[in-house]
Image 1: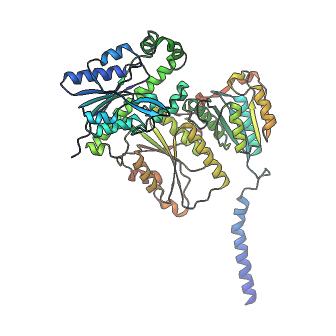
Image 2: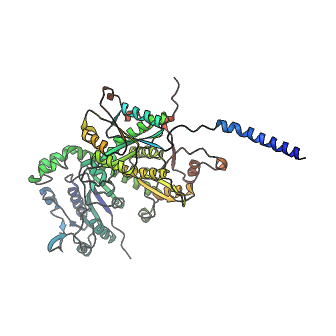
Image 3: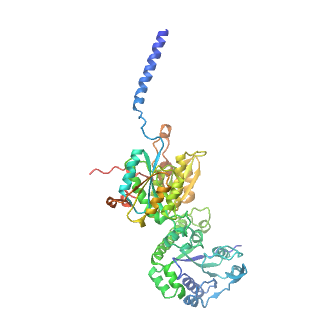
Length: 187
Length: 373
């Protein structure tokens, strides 16, 4: 009797293990990657963004299993409240954010966009850096400082960002840009 | 018995000098010629000779003197108008702020008393005084207007007439000294009166009038009687009003951006609604997403509404009805699991509860399959 019970228990255990085994085998193995979510900030200011900068940011996001955080920086004139709506600037920034997000999403890179206002681009960036923690900041140093962050601003970022800062020096390939025209479909 | 409320007509312009006051005075003469009792309750000629000349022949009620900080200032005499009780009263510049101590803070509130006394009112205002347009106009023109009026002031008018001139014609009038005295012309040309500013303001003014006309048409068709027309409980009618349903997660921003672009194209208002479950505690990531959504809504100039309820479809339907929503945008739902598969999907629930309201599911374009050649 006892032997029969032991046999039944053994069969049951074997069956249970047999059923469970495929599930255990099919469960994805934990990746040897950092457990904390990493965040890569990609600030931009104008109507276009260097494709090289975006590709660099996406490459790093893939390698680090990080979230790409494109951030549109907008400036508010002194006579307006810092919290004013900026629909005119948004008509520039929002389509570009959409284009960036679509490109990243197509490569299965998680995206969490940001928009920040400031009296200057540097001020907007400093507000963003105060509010959130980023692991990396990627900035494309453009040829024309009038259109975005100046050389002084870049030095400021290196001094003040509590993150690894990657500044891409201007290159001929920067003529290849991402713009609102890169949005797929109606936007 | 209280008298019937007076008829309210507003001449709306894109800027000073388009001829609003002139048209108001012409209207006064027409009424006078038709045998009606017309007075000018308040006139601002801004030292324009043509305007002053046109006022001749109309009874001009004297202003009253008001003491403020040891100064004697002049204001419209509201009690005087009510005592005089004309049939028609012309009152210039309804956005004006009264001296402290007057019956009301703003002149449009004085006008409300005049209308309530059964007196017909003809008035004037520039589009940049409208509260909802103030920030947008400040951004377009770089000039912040301090004297603002709530949008419902226009909404309550029986007639709005747009006084339109081309920016070029207005600049010619300015240069000819017909708008400001010679000493102020250069400053005006270098600041507010730039052609790009005037073109932008003209577009805003024309759009505003078009929206008011459409709103009136819709309300009249759907509501009917005059009392109901101005009842606070009646939904505010606009051509289109969009609502985006969000949850605090990163993808919600895309939905808001798409909804905003649609609202821009339609020239309509956008509300963003999040229905939070009662007692729902947010994770750090959700808090961060919510803060990002708030900033995005604020930069775009849209309203982010939060409602606490576990009856999602009912709550959305209620808010949509209250706000006169005509178009709801929502993202793709997560795949339902277990018993949730038996539940009617949210879009169908909304379509059943909100007949006549468009429901749009915003797709992720990046995931679209390209057609094979």
